[in-house]
Length: 357
Image (cartoon, rainbow, N blue to C red; front, side, top):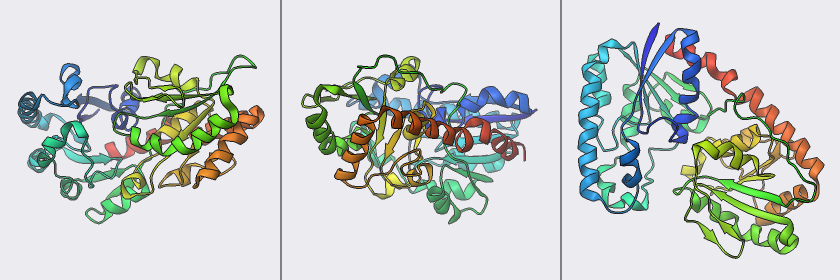
């Protein structure tokens, strides 16, 4: 068996970048000769307030605790053949842990799926922004034996600092994500967005064309937002829903159309299209901004739409509202795309080869 220690920030089933980058592969690794263990930093109790305003002294104590945790990981590092670091080992400027790996026999694999070399600090932790150093990403990349990037944009950045870079897209376990039939002929058409408290700002790009959809279709449509329970939009009748792992599939499956608007900026270019892929795996037609990897995932008009202007967004959504058959056909094509190109089944062997090789 090849023994691998995964170094992560969040507990299992908590963070999308962990769930869809490596956690969903863990049940399959044992059958391929890989014994995996996960070492994470934030407990459920700490997580409740770490990203909330205030609690600054307590947050500082937690960060000190994280350093002790990583010191313990290093003391047993020679028990592993591979250490797999996801984004960063510590939530501070420090690269002490990654540098220390060079003193051990374990090979160092580094995985990232966002443009994390750019500054993107949440409002709740802006007071702690001085402790973050996005520039450390390039240093970590340069120290790794293998780098795995979530898309070509990220891979091109990594290649500036390391020649052993491999592209593995964010993937979906299609044995878990499967389409659910919609019941009722007279039900409202649900247009949904899924994200988080930190990405709700991207949903705001949809407000102008969703207003027009509401004016055109009235009570025949309903809008859903998942990921920010505090979000409200009375004009569109939106009361945000919290993200819950246990109900995620059921909540998403109620969408008839999934949207993923993004700004055309450097941070968005690093995104790996996860929310769109989730919609598509469930047989839901996805409408996504043509930014970054989205333009590789979507074949416009076949398995989804890539509108650029407010008018194009309005026309794409309107067309799908008016044509249930088109929604079903596009959803079927979207599901096939995920199965063929973005499924865990498609990429499992690639992970195994990189880890064991």
